[in-house]
Amino acid sequence: MTDPSVENERPEQRSLGTAAARNLATTTKTPPQMQGITSRWLLRSLPWVQVDGGAYRVNRRLTCTVGDGRVSFVSTGADVRVLPPELAELPALRGFGDQGVLEALADRFEQREYGPGDVVAAAGDPVDHVYLMAHGKAAVLRTGDYGDDAVVDQLADGDHFGGAALEAAPGTWGETVRARTACTVLALSRERFLQTADASAALRTHIEQARGRAFRPANKYGEADIAVASGHAGEPSLPGTFVDYEAAPREYELSVAQTVLRVHTRVADLYNQPMNQLEEQLRLTVEALRERQEHEMVNNRDFGLLHNADLRQRIPTRSGPPTPDDLDDLVSRRRKTRVILAHPRAIAAFGRECSRRGVYPDTVEHQGHAVAGWRGIPILPCDKIPVTGAGTTSVLAMRTGEDDQGVVGLHHIGLPDEYEPGLSMRFMGIDDKALMSYLVSTYYSAAVPVPDALGILEHVETGR
Figure 1: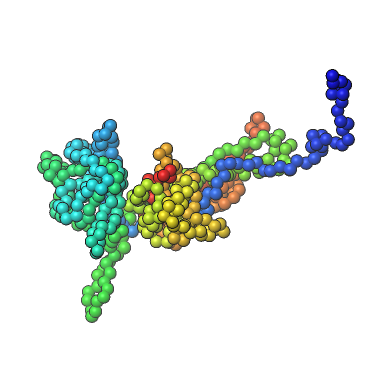
Figure 2 (figure 1 turned 60 degrees about the vertical axis):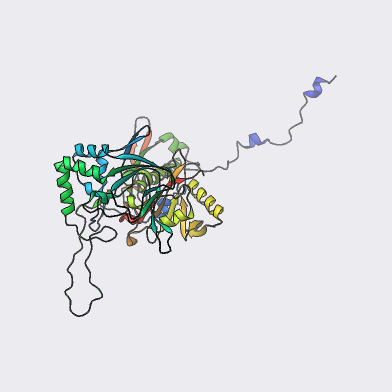
């Protein structure tokens, strides 16, 4: 039997224990950490323009083309119907506001379903229908010099084609439109349109005025043409011209992100060593404001990049995942693409597609960092670009800088009580609970000077 007195004996302590020693030691500690801090490549990559008057006006040449927008739909079960006011996006109906007539036209559209590979419109056939893409993807094909079909454009949800069917001389299809996925298309025949026009004097008048309106010549970008003579000899009469401007240019007003930082005076007085509590509180608050700033510059419906890209600069993927072909299509729509921004999951999906094809993306240097690239253009991660529940996202390609008519960030430096460029911290006083309050503010926006400065690859699948 074991002696209890032996069990209760403990080894004699011969030195100071660590628990007691910590009371006299200075603990090595880190500043407060924060998981929400990201690389914020968008803020670091944009050139920033000083805005002194609170607004940034983008003057452009006069654009003559209209009616290039997308059309919206509403569905009830499997039945799809175009929203009547959206028909004004068609060039022939631009500016027509009689809702009753638009309702009648919307009722005359016929819903059609096409499977992958089905021909929606064939080259050489008469243009006798206007088509609205309600859902799916289709390719626009043109016969090449060697007899094969070349993809010259892609159509996706909201696009429309065949608007010439509503004109006086519709002509024939110059390209073939073939479905790449299952497509739901609304079609309006020229015959049904003319029947509606016969019953509406307002529509007849609008169409006649549209057909008889003298349009100024325009270049391929839709800008009013500048008449120039070249290749002549002798003394011909040279054309006279002028450069016309938009009468109502867009103005970008600076947006604001603000918060009120509160610190108790007891904390600031007694617990400021070895780290300044106010400085640490402010540091993390500034990080949160900068994260919100980048989120707004991507997603804000007024000035965010996702919502301000021109509709003609939005292209869908060919097959779902982001492939090298998709990025080539995206980059080829502008000169001097400086950066590509994508969600990290989209970058990973692009890497998988490259591996599947045996293609190796570039490694390029950007601001002292080695990052993935394509065609020498850095592909930068931006987790502010949303990923939908279905796993689809978007990829942005930008030309940047005022000198190149590229995307720029807008801010105002020289604020009262400025803490860092473009961000101020104002003391608001101490309340009756001994709380010090500081108003922390930053002002910002983003501007797209010309449409081709920004492009978006849409419907990018990240999970396949």
